[in-house]
Length: 312
Image (spheres, rainbow, N blue to C red):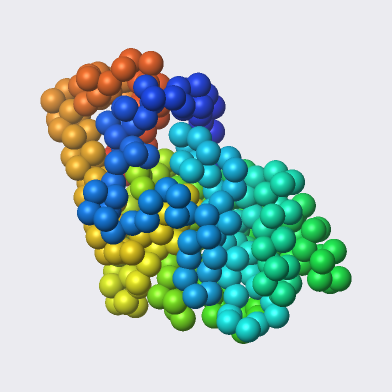
């Protein structure tokens, strides 16, 4: 879970979830409407999100669009061709219609849910997990566990940690710990499809909010970049937004964007800024002041990172 609570920035983000927010989010570090892969044609269009995927993974889009969730939460149904059991990743919010739809898609495939996994514990990914497990258990006439890193989001005794391999229904789904967006963020590697399921660590467009330690997030991005190249990853299946068919380009964009923003903050500090507010007044001078509380939170994470990096 997150190291810090963020009621101020969350309130600002939700209150300003209209066009004014969307115009300025890039300057705060996470623009949900601008991404090089969108401009280059290397990502699908918005209408293609629901039902997108790979041979083994299918997306069911939750009806919870917002400035923070983009088009909605991507729930993933993953199963080996011909297998009787599937794994469902991130059932999404506690929305009965969506949960029943996911269960219905599995039933239409003539299969049953064997296991539920969570990429992390944020409510738009996890709030519906227990209810969905109950629905799935009723259909399959057997208990369905929910596995997550954080014990409070689990249903059953088994969690998820680095190096775990899920084999439900004959799958091979490998678990990687990628903290930063949240302290409990995980990435799932589906080698048979060359697919990386990134949760909110990498989105289908825009950049993500970092609630954990920025240093952890940068390390996670670097690790995913190296892993994707060495493993020959073919596609990123994110927690929000369309699939990314060029994982290396997407990760390079994320890393470059974060490093550029960090350099701007560092330059402001060298120019005399001492507090997050003072940095915001320099770096975000052309941003609507109503967004400065969110900017201050983002800058503080960067200041903490710079301080930790300089410590002996």
